[in-house]
Length: 110
Image (cartoon, rainbow, N blue to C red):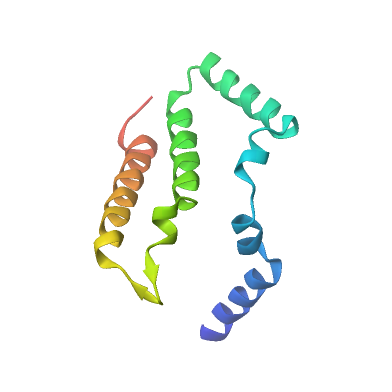
């Protein structure tokens, strides 16, 4: 099982997805019409179809993506040490976001 897991980790590292996510230019992305036109069309379609559950989930994912790029998230480690007083709010915020997503997907009926 360990060898299988190592192969998956090596494959994931070879795709360099983590580096690409770290290097995303958010200001450039949200000012690029090739991204904004389909994104706004998707949001308008969801509003028209009254798919508010999906809109909330997309909003949570965009908010989490934005928060991961803030200075607060970059200051979670100082000199290689994890700052526990800064990790706990992140942990509770993630738990709340995950709880809302689980509730929207499984907890209520449409």
